[in-house]
Image (cartoon, rainbow, N blue to C red):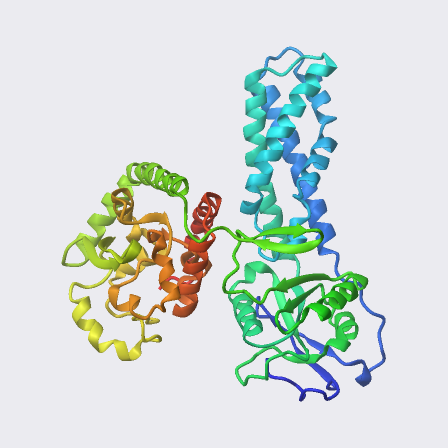
Length: 502
């Protein structure tokens, strides 16, 4: 965020180029250098996306009705029952609207289709019951149980699939959302870096506005300085800003109230990055006491029932996965043995829950003498805590493929069954790496290390060591069963896109 002027000076003749997640840049010219053009209205991407989602939901409901009635029902009166069912489609759209399934994309930056699952499931249960009562009250040909069940399952699957498709098409066909940051400092730099690493957010940071409490400029800052807080309206209009991102504590409470009012007049969304960014997580509940906003957080330790649920999920999924993936495991073992001399599996000591050591199992992806050769490679490592190389010469050709696809980690399912690891959890560390973790960061070991987790889903080796420790800490202090399910679902696209694989 290298500033284009010193604090207190006037805005320069040309606004700097925007820094976008997709890598595209653009220049926002100051009107003093040309004739003032009328302000461009903010793109109505939110309105378009809501309508597309509603259309996708309507098509999914219609198709689900057809499947339930024509594929699983009796032939007598099928056409009539289907016609009566079409009249319920507007009611479905209203119901999904009540559940907030058309508005969260605008409120959240990182909203994805997987986040719709709990709300969609609950809405489908209520809506399907309503459809059954609707046919019963009309006294037309009633739906039998198998028709209702087929409709329910098909509707859930299709609505989620069509929603994912609509969101993918929207990201591919629209330009990134133009975002103005209010306040600078280390938190703003952290946000800018994360936005750059995640183009799926669809954000483009055009720059930031200075405040009285912005930290002094840092030579490493990348976002351009576009003015002061008083320049908000002018910058938003000239830059076609769609969202304002306020950074605390640079924006104080008094200024935030005024900022919210001004952005609403501009028809611009606003998001707030709180001061406690390293402590708060997704499990925070927004409450109020007589109009005073209160943030509620879970206790830092899991209850016995929570641990039992997590363990039950680990055992059931790991058992099914080991049986279903047996052909892959056998084929991988044969490939490793035929292409490189040495054992098929590689075992290494890691630090587990509460500091207890255990041996993690993986398919061998390196040459046999990899440990001895590591001594000569430490000088090339990008981090002092772990050996991180862009191109590790010890990796075998088959090993490179196994690492990119994460197949090398499948034997860890046996560690899960033994209770040494979990499907989702903090990253299992080497004892030598664990020594670099600060005292508060060792709370990450309150939970069993996992095969996947926040670090693996959000970027793996693209995330610095210190930030990985923070992610593990946030995971442990914000655990929920749905959080685990959500991370498991997000692991597949992270593996397929090979984000951060080394």
